[in-house]
Picture (cartoon, rainbow, N blue to C red):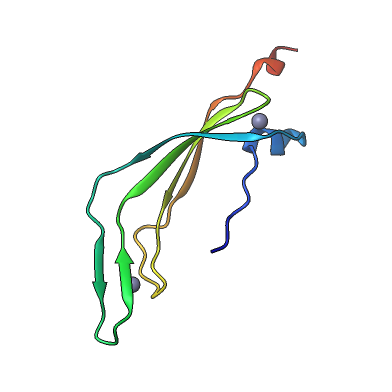
Length: 93
Ligand SMILES: [Zn+2]
Ligand SMILES: [Zn+2]
């Protein structure tokens, strides 16, 4: 499984570096449709949208929402959305 890289969107914009700390995960509670097709392959058609909150060491705070896809090409509405909650103190300079 390939893990995606993740950098702070605000730091990236400012071209500075930071460590990112994932916080809570929220999930819309829908039961995923899971089944084996006639050829025996497993499908997971999960309609849940996962939201995860992150903090970076420069004090930024944001939420990223993602939806899942299945290997067969099934996908609910593609979603990858970032909401920045806190941009920072250094904005006051
Ligand atoms: Zn940052
Ligand atoms: Zn599938």
